[in-house]
Image 1: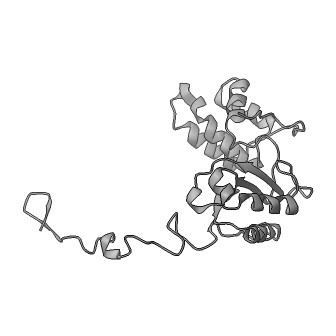
Image 2: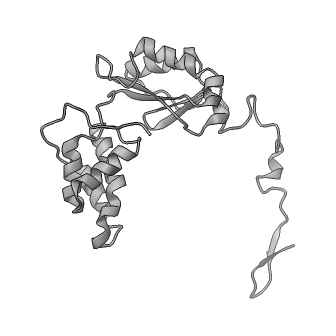
Image 3: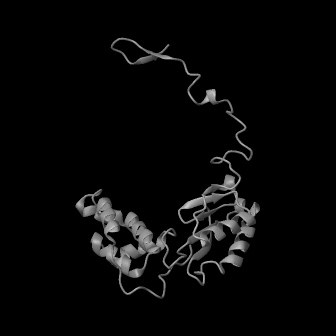
Length: 220
């Protein structure tokens, strides 16, 4: 397990926005009053969506909000890698999958593009707009190589498509997530090879249903 530490430079304070606080209250209300600490993970996520990362003053604010020791919040934040403990790019956090299927399909080339256009991994870019990381495993092996960018998956990537995606984010655009070769979910390249007749799954071939008096519907 990697060592995860809080950033050396921290903001002086933190405050929940009105919208974030309302969502925190919504999550807290899901639990009994003496179990409000159970909302720590969704509230950490809400803070990250507000700030872009989880600064130390925010962890203390969460602890106070939930009535739990600060160390317990810190334990959760440092355990789950989805919580960013240092500032990340304001335009895009790019997480390139480096597990075997992605590596065999060209993930190394994607990382080379990130190095060239952004800089070293795990380091905020000079303009503060990009961060890229190597991660394992994002679970989209059938569509390798792929990357999670902010909250979405970008699949079937090439060096050229990764470069274009970075350029689009840099230009303030919002590239469409999903497969770069047009496939749906994890179907084969070029389209489905089985269940190609819609009648097999759209219900049109099903028998008509009739309802008997005072009974449940039965097959005709």
